Image (cartoon, rainbow, N blue to C red; front, top):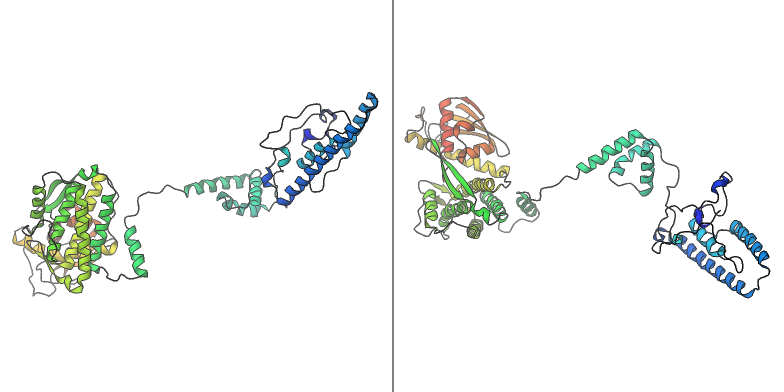
Length: 510
C-alpha cells in the first residue's frame, strides 16, 4: 500500500523487490525540514498544488451529492476499482515530490467514490498542529560527488574551527565515519581549539594606561608635555592609584611591615595601607614646598622624611582610612602639572631632605622609586599583582642610586662603617672603581668610584665586579633584602664589594 502510510516517497509506485508480507505495513515518514527552510519557488509550487487539491476535493463532494446511488454492491465494487486506479495513477503535480506529492494525493483521493469513504487498514496518528506534514521539506544533501581524501583531510582544521560551508561540513563528517586516521586527527584538532579559548584575567594590565597614553602622544603631541624626568613619577602614581581604587574599605586597614636598612641591620615598622599612603603624601610635601605649593603638614613641619612621617602618625587621633586617598592623588596631580608648566629651568631647583638635598629632576625620580616600592608593599599585603616599572623608568631609578652610592660610602667611612680609602685622586680624575653589572630591562653597566665621591668611575681602574638583577638591585636599595643576600655574582676585591653593597642598602629610609 502507498499513500500517507509510507510518506508518499515512492510516488504511488511499489518496489518490485519488496516482499509481499511488508507491502501492507504502514510506514512512518522520516524527519522533514520546516516549511521556512524551503526555497521560495518550491514553497510557491506547493501552495498552488494544495489549492488545486482542495478545489478537486470540493468538486468530488458536490458530484456525489448530485448523483443517486445504484445498487450497493455495484457502488462498493466501483469504489474499490476507482480507489485502486486513483491510487496507482494519480500523477504528482509539477515541481512537487516526496511528502508534498503525498499531501496532494491524499487531498484528491480521500473521497473518490460517491457515498463511501476509503478507510485505511491502520488510521494515521493525528497530525501535530505545530508541524503539518505538508509544510516540511526533505533534509538537503550535498550536491556532487565527495571530494578526495587529501582535500577532506585539508578541511579538518577549518571543520574544527566551524569555518566550513554546510556542504563541506557534510562531506567531512561523512568521511570521518569511514576514515579512522582522519577521525583521530579531527578529535585532536577539536581539543586544540578548546585550548585556544583559555580563561583570561579580568584585571586590566597595570601598564595599559601608559601604553594608551604613549600611543595617543605618538599621534598627537601634548600641548604642555610632562618632562622626561617627571614621567616615572607620573606613571608610578597612576599605577598605585589604580591599585587603591580596586581594593575595598576593609583592605585599607590591612597590616604591613615597612623595612629599611640602618647602619648594619634591617629595621622594621608596622603600618597599614592607609598609613603608607599618608607617609607618601607627607614626603611628597618636600617637593611641593620647593615648588612653592602648600605643604600638607604646614609651614613649620620638619624637613627629614622620617620626622615628617612620625609627626603625621602622632597627630592622627584615629587610624587613617581611605579618605587619605584623594588628598594624596590631588597632590600628585598638582606636582605633575606644576613641573610641566614651569619649563626646563625648574629641573635644577633644590629639594631639601634635611640632611641632604637633591635637584628637582632627581627628587622626582626618588619619589617615583618610593611610590613603586611602597606600592609593592601594599600589593603584597592585599594579594594584588603589581609588576615592576617599565624598563626606561627602572633604568632611571637605578642610575640615580648609582650616583648616590659614592657619597653614601664616604659617609659610612666617616662613621667607621667602611674600609678606609686607599688611593685618593684629584677631583674629576679616574679612581679605583667597582663594575656594577645590572641585568634586565632596566639594567646596564656602571662604574662606581670607591675612594672619593669626587672621583670618576673608570673601567680601566676597576678592582671588583658585582652582577645583580635590576629588580633585585632596587630591592637592595630599598632595604628589603640584606647586602649579604643580594649579589648573584662577585669577583675581585672583597672589601670593595662589601662596602658598595652596604652603601646601596643604606640609601633606604622610612
